[in-house]
Image 1 (tube, helix red, strand yellow):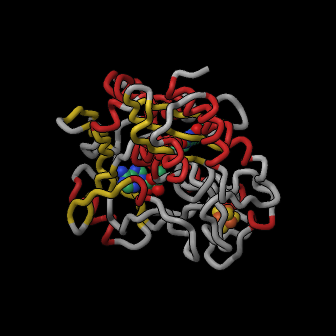
Image 2 (tube, rainbow, N blue to C red; image 1 turned 45 degrees about the vertical axis):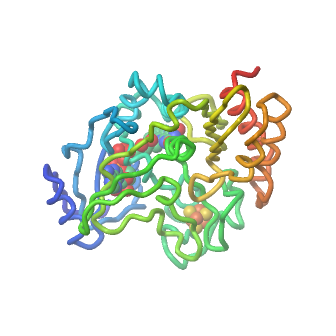
Length: 327
Ligand SMILES: Cc1cc2nc3c(=O)[nH]c(=O)nc-3n(C[C@H](O)[C@H](O)[C@H](O)COP(=O)(O)OP(=O)(O)OC[C@H]3O[C@@H](n4cnc5c(N)ncnc54)[C@H](O)[C@@H]3O)c2cc1C
Ligand code: SF4
């Protein structure tokens, strides 16, 4: 492991100044992803600012929704009574994330900013434009079953691994950010970037910017919701493909819909064509299957990941069936 300067900071302004002021400085929250990357020599920061004592842990209901601190533990959010009552897609996504031990350490902010599970990125030696810009993309010629189906580039075909981000996209959530230029909010849809020719950039955050909280609007609270995930093994595993759906159903008819897909792109992927297909229709098993097929349109598989296409259709149908209480 390369040496780095470690500082634990208890004040938000000081953490931002430290993060923005010194090049190659990163924030440390629960450490469940970053420490692994440090140990494997994949992350090589000059400085680490430990933010785990900042006042970002609360989970509160507000007049217009829910504010979930960026340092709230995944386990606490998953078990929160208001989350379970009003945002079941979120509770399910978090309940199926990692293991109880990891969920007790990992934070919401860190989950959104975890790095890809691409094998070639994680092995520390293969060509990887994300880890070593300009070195090439091992996965493009390799056999990575996790590779993207949508929005990839010649430079990178990695996927984003977060379950939480997919549920938040379906709930139209925003990320609240504090940084050197003040505070701003970013729709979850725009937090993560596509790889293009700069795959080493994962998010829209500027140096020194911290996620302080996630805001989930009240609107989604009354909608029928579900999250479904398919993975290589039943627990302790990132999604191979996943889907979150949030439906406004009035007198049996879908009046509005948000559908988000996971494990298929460099960012959580909004399936707007599927939303259009659903709106104005009555949810039944036939429509759920039709929507699953529609979610795969435009997918561009590589040699090793075509099996994800039928799985994607199934996971979208499953999420819709769960949201509608169908068998
Ligand atoms: C065995 C195992 C299984 C897992 N399975 C899953 C799974 O099924 N689904 C899933 O979604 N995830 C899974 N994960 C990933 C896990 O959820 C993340 O590692 C965790 O959520 C990261 O949170 P953290 O607080 O530990 O972040 P850290 O490791 O401390 O940080 C991660 C990144 O986020 C940045 N960061 C953290 N907080 C902030 C902030 N507030 N503002 C700005 N930057 C910040 C850090 O600089 C770092 O780059 C798994 C992890 C493990 C170890
Ligand atoms: S897909 Fe992206 S992360 Fe994976 S090897 Fe290629 S450049 Fe690296």
